[in-house]
Image (cartoon, rainbow, N blue to C red; front, side):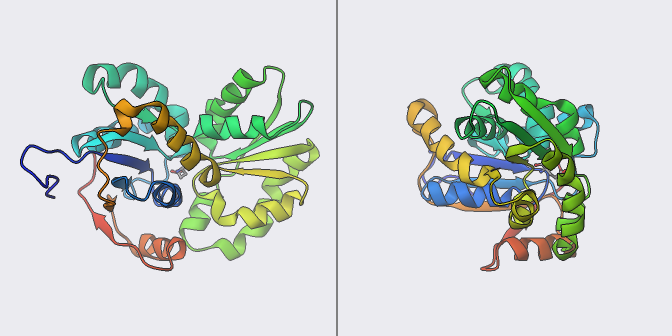
Length: 280
Ligand code: DGL
């Protein structure tokens, strides 16, 4: 890929990483908010799902993905995957970044969602988190919400069947499974529910319906782009070098029939996915 227009002029980008294709929704929302900023999406479709894997494996995979995006001239990377944000981001920020790319940044999606949930929720309310098993086990959302509201009541629920079901085009079978998953959240009186996984916005209406109309749903697609814009405004040293040619490239590590069908479901208008060799 030719990344220079003029010799010696590097066109830096915003990188968006997800374990698979669910993060395309976040990428699309970011592109909608910042249409001129160049953007490179990477979905590790060869190894999705991450949410059922160990913390060490999630770190290794995320580290490889972040490294790939930096080698392909990303100035700033958004880890759109909640599982990777929960299990790998802090270590990448603290250990890898300072020694390898001290002037670049990696940001996750948990903190923006936790902030939005707390901003929108009254003191006595109960927070719910629906996420992958790895994200729930990490308790990362609980940590972030508690930092902002120390005495918050938080109920987490893992929804391991939803990612494979959505990826395989099985949305029409999802309702009874969603009913099972949300039952403990309803019993606990949750009034603000964070969709803590890239894929769940695909079934947001079903989740809203199952929880009831009075429950506030926090969808990262509504939150992350605005928070990113604010971040870039506050950090001109990061924003300044990012190219504004409106070039958006979407890459995946494997392109299967189900990936194609899922991409078509997310982007009925069509999207060009480039396949790159695996990251490992
Ligand atoms: N992208 C993951 C997340 O947001 C869901 C898919 C997976 O398990 O890898 O947690």
